[in-house]
Image 1 (cartoon, one colour):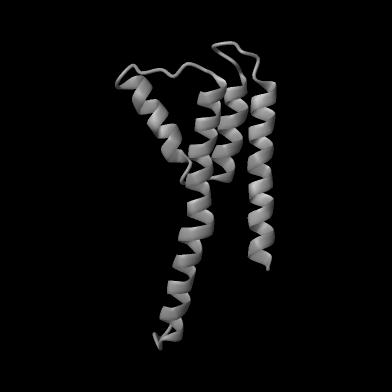
Image 2: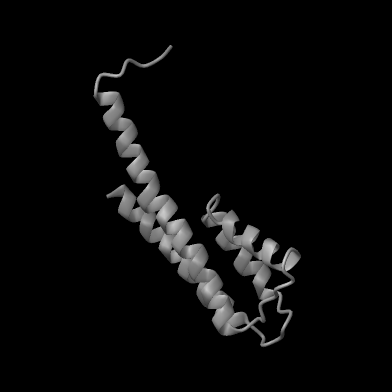
Length: 112
């Protein structure tokens, strides 16, 4: 039950970021709304969200690829952060936790 509450809060915060981002986008190429989107989604999807930021850096620095700011690019950016964060927090982490608990319950003596 607690996991469902945490999942709902996390999803609500993510949706809040998306709504604020899309409603605050001013149509300018260098809109500052990217800062809001990037930092908040990076925080709630950390550390997996670092992959998105690293990909942006590599595409920009190594390949000189830039993405034009648009509603679509903002939504896609949010979606990638969302998926990485969701998988990290609500799929991978619970799976690792279950494996760890099963290993401890399986008779492995705790190391001192």
